[in-house]
Image (cartoon, rainbow over all chains, first blue to last red; front, side):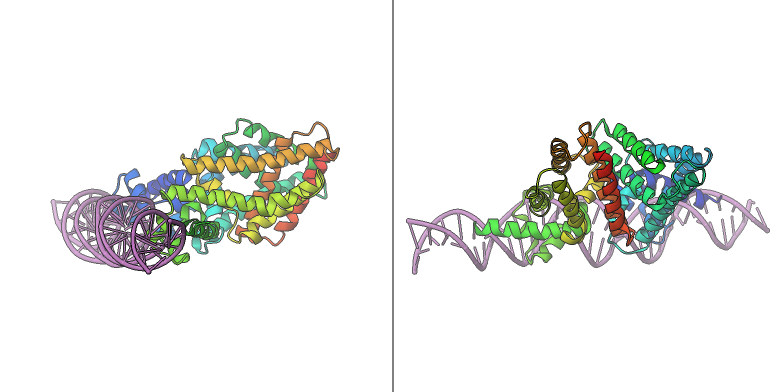
Length: 195
Length: 195
DNA sequence: TGACAAAACGACCGATCGTTCTATTCTGAG
DNA sequence: CTCAGAATAGAACGATCGGTCGTTTTGTCA
């Protein structure tokens, strides 16, 4: 890896942490530059525009999400065990892994009607994630863990709702019962998908 | 109502619409001024700071939410019918009523770790809304519509998740099935709260 | 109608935004 | 060791940010 590419990766790593705190919209070249100890122009030379930087930060987040959430889940047995670890990993993702909150949830609110490459890429990553959930649920159906007539896209929809609600209750409302509520709701979703 | 109070209300009305589009964080004095056809300084004279403006916009949103969602629901019979209209009104709130999306959902992502009066006020309004849901569910228990051992705060948590997921699916992903998914999920939540 | 207060304006502040340019320093292959 | 190209720094651009100021217009009420 060339020197430039190494620096670029270091920038994107810091940019992801910063994005977790202030959101993709609040991401600023000046603040990011002083966080990576570089001049603003030196940093900027690695990206064609701020929009490209934002898009690449999303890609960085997606790659890290695969590493810490998707990949560990895929090592678990097919079906329900895999889905359970997927859910647990996802809960940690927006709290312990990225202490500033899930960047996708934040970006979903900021870019839901702001056309451009950032929004397009965000949609792509979200569909990938939700597709992974839906696919895992389908496998659980095949394994006999879930009932045969389960709408797996509906399953992904409801699980996504639980995850976002958890983040709101935990990070904004500071509700100490949030993690318990998330687990209860998830158990209910599993039950409903089983019988 | 004095002239000043009248323009102040006009400003806040436009500010709410603008906030729905760009978020509380994206709200800008310059843009807002030209939208209400006023000079920036003339507009600014009505507020002590931008933070106060943001806080007052949240209050304006909450008042409008009561008018178009809460109040109509309270006119329905106690229990399940009331909750159903509450849910339906909430679905419309972030799509037809405020075409730029629910400002509370957007602000929840932006201000979840930005201390200040805006965050505090946002938390207050959200707790009010969720409290209304929980209280309505409690009434439904008393009416015998819901089972006696229902955790009504848990009910509010799960309903909130459905609402946010609906907004993401509809506004960001553009999923034409989003409204159907929301209804299916809500029906499932009602079923689970009944038996 | 006249007088006083409320309201709106235009100009301006320092700071920061994303971006561009040129000049300098560094790095790695021959 | 050399030297071309890559990498970074620095200064500056116009635009916009939230906010302040003194002045002018407008509304209110005796």
